[in-house]
Image (tube, rainbow, N blue to C red; front, top):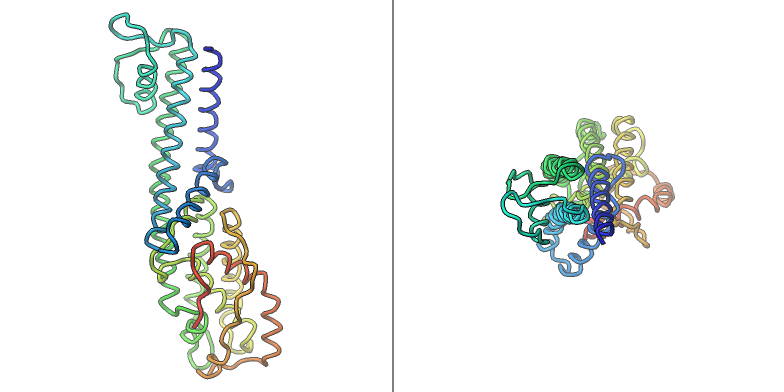
Length: 330
């Protein structure tokens, strides 16, 4: 029986460490297998319970993060408890000769990984001493990197909402943003903003890959919702690129860089619970653009061009639906 307890403990500790390192330190790895399944389950439950209410769904991110940290702590704690149970006479009371109970082992494993330094119990000489040192080391690793992980995520959440507010402050739809970027002659006033937005979105895409829990941070207000902001921005770029004569375009390199940043973001979404939409969103309101004085190519030309964007636009709509939002339109 001691061997069974020892084996169970080792498996729990190893799985916890792998999932923890996978999630927090492997930048390109996304969430660990356990964290990924736990996060997806919580998100699905929260979407079901929220009934479309953004306020309740906004709790999903903090709950996913808290549940992930709690899962790591409990897995590590349980694992070391089983390990010390499997080590025959691995621990003994500092005073007295009372037999060691399960509660004593749980207590001993707990104050080792939380580095409390209590001396109520002590490891037996030999293997138990080395195991105690390793248990304390894993606890310090969990606490140190756990705090860093939380701070990084909170910083990224703030950056997400700042980016979305900057984009949507110029227009709540692609048509409105296109109108705001038009200076009466061309879109060159949009150049500086494109450079800034591209840099911010590339950073956000990298953060979504490094910290997959960001996918579950839902904004209560549409004004700070990144899926909506990215959709509005990319649809604006599509309008400019395919529906407006090249003579009026912003800087071509900035335009391409911005499109590439959106591609990175869409690729990051593929590691979450996101799925492309089965339907294609409606075309932009080109009549509105014409009425505000923006020159357009022929209807046949821009309609055919937008037909080639079906896959891209279905991905954007899928990201919106995963976040509980609809396609932004006039």
